[in-house]
Image 1 (tube, helix red, strand yellow):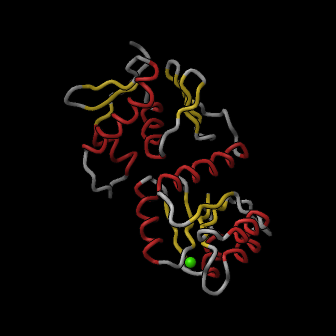
Image 2 (cartoon, protein in one colour):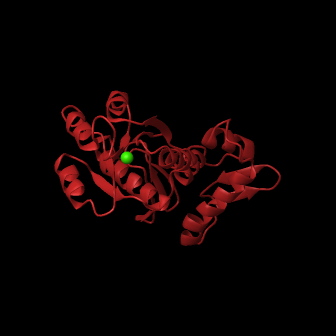
Length: 226
Ligand code: CA
């Protein structure tokens, strides 16, 4: 799962974002000022959310120092109407920016886009899984139905990935919960049912065939043998 570093001094905003990102399946590191953020950025993180107005070292200064030796994707969190910040930020090597206050769905979409852009630098195509007209490329974080891209949330992607890795096998709700959400997830087995429904809406209904089958009293199975 991708690791996101959030450098943001507004505690309420940081906590809200952390909660949503964790819920989406990302691992989150947090820093409340520029210097400690820069220190954490040296760890192996996949993406950085960087507030511009930070105490101590400003976000732009953090970005300039970071870019001397790292090409990790950076999304700036900027104040409304701070056009100068946005331009300076992109010039300094930011990949994208989002204006506060933002809808969490928009932030998640921008994170996925930034991570996807990064993905071709990893090996793509390798390890691609398929089931009938459905393909999943873990390196590019890409799912396609008949060659057309399907937009999935991170958690939906992880669930589908696990189902496809175990194609043909019946997986219990508990197993899926443990492998996709982790032990500490408080949501319970109903969560699995909800996400299976999401996946069917985005995939099975497009194909018109039920790839994800319910095995009554046990769990779920993904199969292309109908
Ligand atoms: Ca701030």
